[in-house]
Image (cartoon, rainbow, N blue to C red; front, top):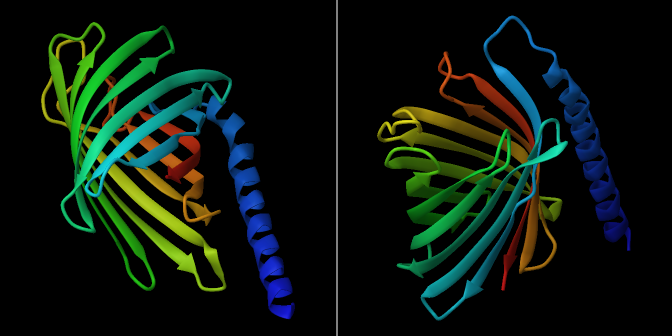
Length: 242
């Protein structure tokens, strides 16, 4: 009973710290309307994707992602992504994937994008850390663009379990996006964006877990400057493994 009480107190403290951190970030959101003497635009956003994994056989895995993204200081739907895929396990730690994505861009006016993608995923658990590496190649057909844009993106993620709270982990990841070609009225070749995330993961059951934290999305859009758009994102994402 004593150990349960201590664990409950630790969980309560951890939740309180998380709430304080989120309040600080949320409080900074309206500041994105204050533009310093700089060409870098900023926005405060909320992303809430859900990822579903379904075993199809001993080696094949089905995947579906629904990913709404809200922008304009979380006042409007900015994007909606629907991303199905099929994976094949090469080993217990390594898998290859083939998928498709539909992206609806709603602001400032509606335009959609179709993607075909291939990816290689490596994941492994160690006593003090869980590592995930994902490298993805995307062929993008963008509304009104001349031709197919090709982009490569690589994510490296680390989960650090908390010793006294086995269902909680500190999470950090970084993902780099690079355009491999230039498409008329579309993306320019070179660095596209970088996403850095810091937050917590909570495991509810063996099948369900969730991340909550802050993500900085630094983008290189078709404007002057290498980084000319920074989005401050509250990321709330859930994994369901059937």
